[in-house]
Length: 242
Image (cartoon, rainbow, N blue to C red; front, side, top):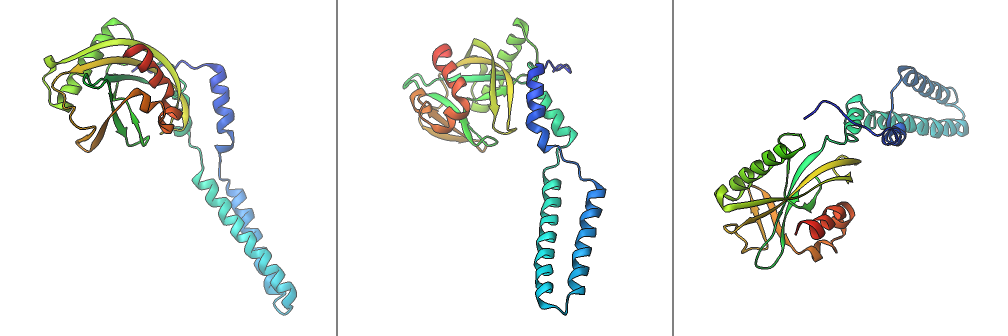
């Protein structure tokens, strides 16, 4: 993977504007000021201890002050935006930083396509694998082709020579990352895969703790979550891969 990041200036500007309110720094001076304020309120309550009316008034005011101070400190601590998070978001704007191979595996008997339950996103996705080379071009395409054959052979316990793969499309896609909660640009290679030995008896099955399910494209197109986050991928598979 290249160490260079190619970023559109407008994308960077939008990212920084979006994250502006999240960049929080807890100042020691602010903490000291809040603590002094609490001490002042407590002292006032003690001074008016003999006057029930003023004592209750200052007690209520002091309690609210303390609660708001604690909530403010907790909010700032829990929402602090570190330089590591900022770097991850900036890397998300890089054009070539997110390369994935999408495997479109179709059931010959009913035309359904295989999906896998992604635990991070909590949704059904086409099986995918991160690029092994991080490069572009014919040689890289061949490396990725061999990589997914090996991957599927191990996953489904099928000899590699029984798996047929065909690179149908390469495409840049800007889409929302559910796990990272930002827009990213992806470079996808779409491979159509056929394997006669793949067990297709069950609509849903599990391998090594990962769930798989056969879907028709029409069912994916009416699944709310799939269409909300993955409509571009589904349309590409339907119109240009199958």
